[in-house]
Image 1: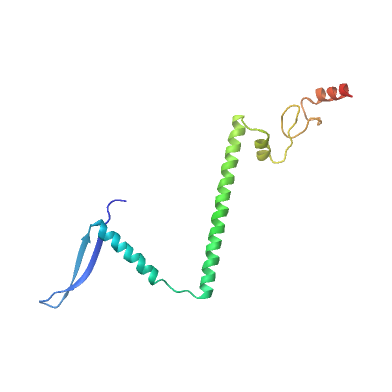
Image 2 (image 1 turned 135 degrees about the vertical axis):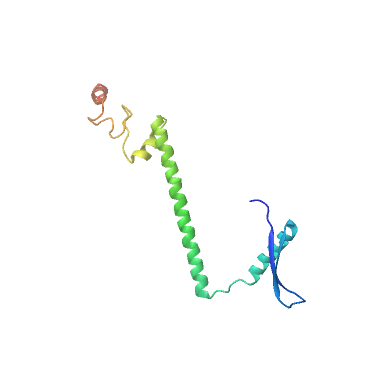
Length: 139
């Protein structure tokens, strides 16, 4: 962020004329700046605004709501990331059964041909006839 400095502005009375002049001083010493920040923080804590019981409750509820919305947004981003990763896996052909079910919903996977949307006993399967012949031989 670059170097910090403290600009101190004071009104000083001219002893000869009695008029006030604006006196601006720039302080570059980091120790003085850090001390000033500590004093400011301490003063802010000491003079913080006192809230009524109702205002405290409203503030607590507001913070809860902000936290709830942040958590909801975090979960949505996480879900999107997972979905994108699963889609990438499927497009690359790396997807497993769980990956496909997650993307395709509750579509069944055929145990004969490995495609989704039907099972091995369905006429939609390209290996339906061979599966039926194996079943007939087994009985």
